Amino acid sequence: MYTSITLIFFLILFNLLTMQEKLNVKGIQELVANYKNNIFTEKPFTVTFFDNEPYSNVFNFYPNAFHNTKIIMGDNYTFNYTFTSNIDLEILWVYFLDITEREEGFYTRISANIHLKRIIKANTEYNGSVTIIATNTAKSTNPNANLFGIETYYTQNQPTVTFSKFELVKVNCWL
Image (cartoon, rainbow, N blue to C red; front, side):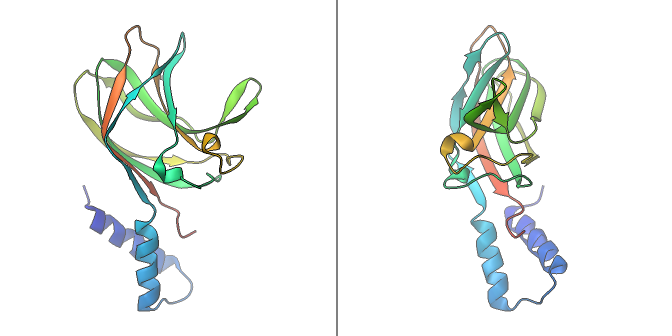
């Protein structure tokens, strides 16, 4: 697994190679500063799911990464995570959500469901990285228009998931 510095280097190199004009040293320093400003880390926290019987258990929240932000179609985020669950779960998935308006009785998903892990065993640590791409645009910068959803199938027992790592990286920050 690459370190953060290596990842930053490859992303900067990729962006430099794809740019039409040459950048001076100051321009490169600005790129690095802009990239660092697009890495958002939440402190470790525990998710207590809302019971949406008989369908699922859900948890929607407004992460620091979305502060004063409007998720726009095509926005590309990398979600790096480490978590444990208190009970066995069949699956855990994440998505972006806008709950400011309902369409046909449902809130607007502004990304696809992205599976983090299937067959989750209680008290076992899981980690990984997934890409989440916005498929719709949020209605506004209102926090309820730019939510991060976490969901699992409905269970009889109350599931809680503890994230020891929760990092969102906005990948297309120079586009």
